[in-house]
Length: 280
Image (tube, rainbow, N blue to C red; front, side, top):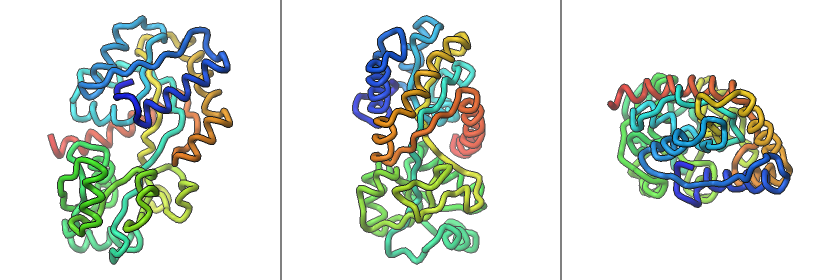
């Protein structure tokens, strides 16, 4: 686990591990070890020191791709074999509740007519920066940045009128409740908790950010061992208790097999690398 205990990715890993243990889905104990630091490099190094038979794996998400795009760690997609995605969570792009913009198309039309006239709160090199930049590239517009390195910073800037646009996890937006208007959701499908917020895909912009719960093994892991792990993970993500937890925490429960997950990751990395080239 390339993060400290307590975050979403860590919590999901522990819930999955507990269910695997309870139901006896794997012949070995499932132990979560936190190895944060180095933009994920510490966890990758620990994985690579283990046997390449699938007994030492990583649970990550697409922040790994940002690290690769920005050359923050000594690793690449070639170092991994994807086991699969067990669901994920996507963010929303918001404006203040009193903004003149009611829809994403209105906002983009304004920015095309008036380039860089709106301020976007981001931390350079973070998920909010990259997701917004991918949408800007796809939509043919440009914003102006103000630095905001945390969700609290972005919220303060939006509510204080010092920024016009910001990205938040769906759970962050729902917890805030007031003062914000979501214009677009970056999942592949609409979020049940936000049924009136369209996805970028349905609005015609080929941009999504699912930030999936991504399970990875060393690239040399035998396919038959990957299949054993994948079967256990697919079983867990379809378990009613896990589905209920996901639905109650603005996460979407689904299973994406390893080959499809790897192909999706490659596509995302290409888009992220294009953004990284503008800031490196």
